[in-house]
Each structure stands twice: as structure tokens, then as C-alpha cells.
Amino acid sequence: MKQTITIKDVAKEAGVSVATVSYVINNRTDKRISEKTRKKVLQVINLLNYTPNQSAKALATNRNHTIAFYLSEENSPLRNAQQTYFLHFLVSYFHEKGYDLICMNNSYTEKFDHADAIICYDVSSNLFHQIGDSNFIPLVAFDCMINDPLFFQINSDYKNLLEQSNVHFGDAPYTLVLLDTDNQEKKNYISSLFPNVQYINDFSDTLKVNDDNILVIDYVLNQQLKDSHNTLYIPAITKEKADALFTCLEYALERTPIEQHNIFA
Image (cartoon, rainbow, N blue to C red; front, side, top):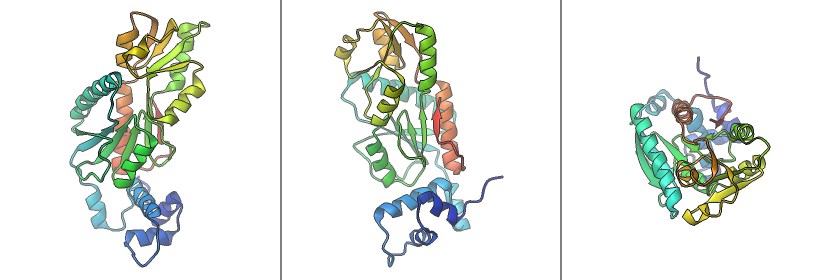
């Protein structure tokens, strides 16, 4: 049985008073509420599926089975190739689930009215929050880390990658080689686990990989490096990870309250 969400739950999650939530819901212009607070309350209302009346509840159940897919506009051919590879995989996966994807980039962060939810792929925290501030539909982070427990975040299980690599290479040193990212939080997390990390932006960077033993998780880098190094390739893009993404989207669309929003797969 689903938990009934009350206005008190919304107020607690948003860190505001019940009165403030009520003012936002009723669009009270006579009360001084900052735009930041108003957006936060609306996001929590959306994420928790709080519906003040039955007509609003009925409206929330309507879907057009379209997902907006945001990614950063890339100048790097390697990062662009990895995006294309992943997008091709994801379009096919979601088509089987009955959903269409609309691809967007960081040149457009305004309100988008034609999707049930938004997936942000490997974007910076700033871009993620810009998109979130403009849209009040479910927003999910994929392959990026956001310091906000309200949002689902699906990332590679880097601790598991570390364990597999240590078993594979034994006592021999190795380097995790991966495509560069604009998401600093993910970089910090990876650096806290792996002693040797090297980021790649373009083809010339692949010639600077000096360690013989390397762990690679990006498909395009594996294609570039597998013949010249002792490479352990553990794909970052898997059906299991896509399944985790889809499950989180379903939770978000149904506004099912769960405790764990950080998923490592």
C-alpha cells in the first residue's frame, strides 16, 4: 500500500513551514516568498506526488511516453563518440519499454513541456540544477553525481570496479583511464577510491597513457587502447545499469517514496 503524502511531508522535505507550502500551492502573491524557495517547494511537490485535490492527481497520471535526454555539447570527438554510442543503446532500450527519447543539449535549459521526465547524462551540477529550476517533471542524473538527495542518481559501481581491478592486476600498479567529465563531484569521488586516474579528452591524450596496466570503462577508449596496453575493460554501459535507470524513472513518475536515491550499478 502506497504511503499517503501530506502537506507536512512536503514542508519537512523542502525545509519550510506548512504555511509556506500552502502559499506556494495557492500562488499567494500577497506573501513574500523567494523564487528559490518557491521552486524548491514545487520540486518537492512533484517528486513526492503531493496532490491537493483529485483533479490534480488525475492530471499527474497522464503520460505521453516521451523522455527528454540532456547531454553536454561536446567538442571532443572521443566524448562525442561515447555519447553517440550510449544514445544508440538507450534509444533501443527505451523503445522496447514503450518510450521515445528526445535528445537535448546544454544550449537549451528552459522549461520543456513535451516529456514525462528528464534524464541528464554526464552533466555538471550547475547544468543539472539549471534544468531542474526550469522544469517540474521528474529529473534523474545518470553518470553524474549531484549533491542533492531529492534526485535519483545512477552511477557506475566504482567500488566494485576497484575490487575487480585489484583482483585482476594483483599487486601490479594500474591506472583507471576514462573520458573526461564536467562533473567535478564524480571526479572527486573517483579520486577518493583509485590512486591512479587519467582523464582523456582527445586522441592525442591516448598517446600519453604510460601505464601498461589500465582499467577502462568507456567503449570508445577500449577500442583505442586495447591493442597497446594490458587492458581490463569493464563496460560502464550495461543492461543492468539501464534497468536501474528505468526503475528509478518509474519510481519518479509514480512519485513512489523510497529512501535510497543514490544507485550504483
